[in-house]
Image 1 (spheres, rainbow, N blue to C red):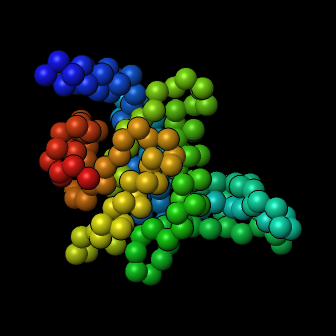
Image 2 (cartoon, rainbow, N blue to C red):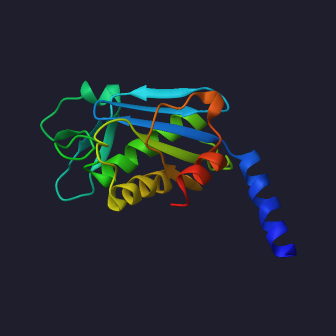
Length: 173
């Protein structure tokens, strides 16, 4: 009983220290909103990658700037573009989310990790498979979230976003 109370107190403390990010994903748009500060990242979901020989590819531009990037050895990738599903490239999607979170939260070493509500805005007819849900949650974790949920439904207004109540409503993922 005492351990459960301590866990609940720790969870409440962490939720007060961090922020909630509402991430809406369309094939041609990515919008991440920090619910507390109301700041948002709203750009094209593009990542420009430069390949230099056999070395590791380098991200040279993200978002709207990536669409303006040209070069023989540069590839512009949209990780949310596929004919059947919304999410097609996990690694590039993770880099895109990491960049967007740094834009919103800054680059502080000690900034609290956010919780992220991932909301796919299209290609959800018939619901999402468990694989899609897991990939979207892992995308958020890979970008630095301490917890994440995937929400499918009407657009949430900033006033009604409460991570814990939404998580409870959709069931533990």
